[in-house]
Image (cartoon, rainbow, N blue to C red; front, side, top):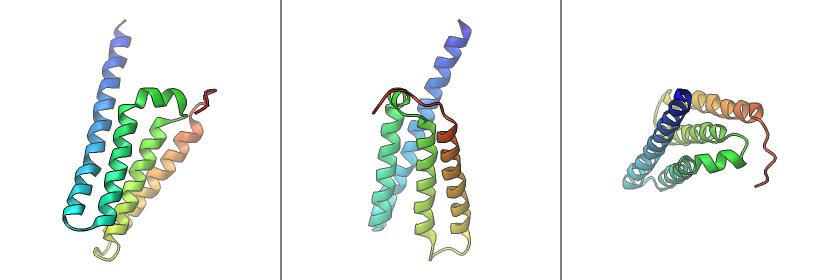
Length: 123
């Protein structure tokens, strides 16, 4: 009985952490829009909204999609790639660090997707 409540508490913390993680690109996108960096601002907001919707419907998506965690990892890698584009001409070496982070997250998403069990449900 204790394991059930621990799992339920863990799921609540996971959902909270995913919602909080979705909040960060939304705020960053708003900041970019204020600085008149329209393209990156819109991309950050789009990623944030996708992240938010995946976080809100995590349980339903988990029943239909092979790996929701792979989606989160891919979106985090995509956000890092957007940062690479933002920093490409302005910073000396920071963009390369974000490029490495993006490669790690995208590789992780591929590994999570491949290792996840296949569902028999169709989208």
